[in-house]
Image (cartoon, rainbow, N blue to C red; front, side, top):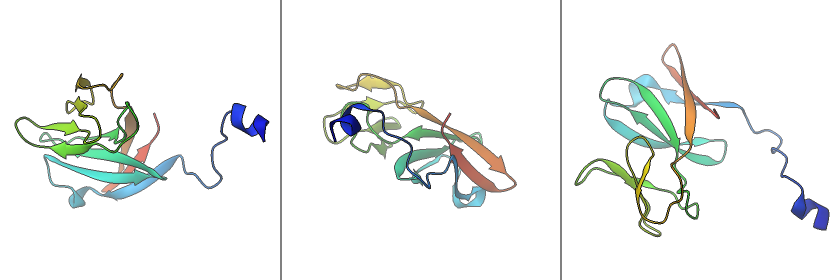
Amino acid sequence: MVLQYVTPVAEKAGARQSVLVGQSGDFAEGSVKIVRFNREPVLLIHTSTGQFRALSARCTHLGCVVQYQESPVPHFGCNCHGSQFDMNGVNISGPAPRPLPPYRVTLSGSSIYVAKP
């Protein structure tokens, strides 16, 4: 049992490397939606220029899920301890020690896939 504690956690069986999260028509330009990559929450951002980007939705402070906030300027905020991140995931205030990790987004026709970088 002690060995399980100190050895790295193996990737869970059945965890996919790339996950279909929706169709491009499901996301309006300029919108942000939380989708799931396996069991992890991911922010899927459809920019006003039509591109898709994805960031981890887990705050890098203690792992709470951040939320999209439009006012006063668009950003992601953590309600647990007040960390804030800009639209690129860069931490701009609060105790978060680093930016939100990015995910890779791939389009295949109108299907949107998210994968670890």
